[in-house]
Length: 98
Image (cartoon, rainbow, N blue to C red):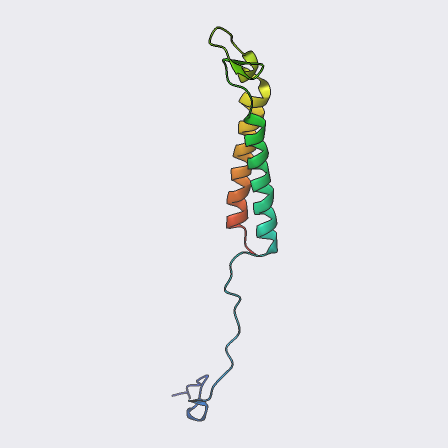
């Protein structure tokens, strides 16, 4: 029968070998950049959603008045879209490998 070749011999046993150093932190600089971009999108989306409520006219509550600005494109379409995009960017930033 043929000789078996082993990686280690008896003379190698007990010798310390230097283990490769691992960077144990998962997120890199690119991850943090994408996280900040996502956070900025979320904050801008919430800021665009702000404004007077339906019964506020000139900063005062008036139950007899109606403010149509609560249905503006900015508050109904653009702001929520920016928030969802921001959360999608956050998911990408978390799952992105270094």
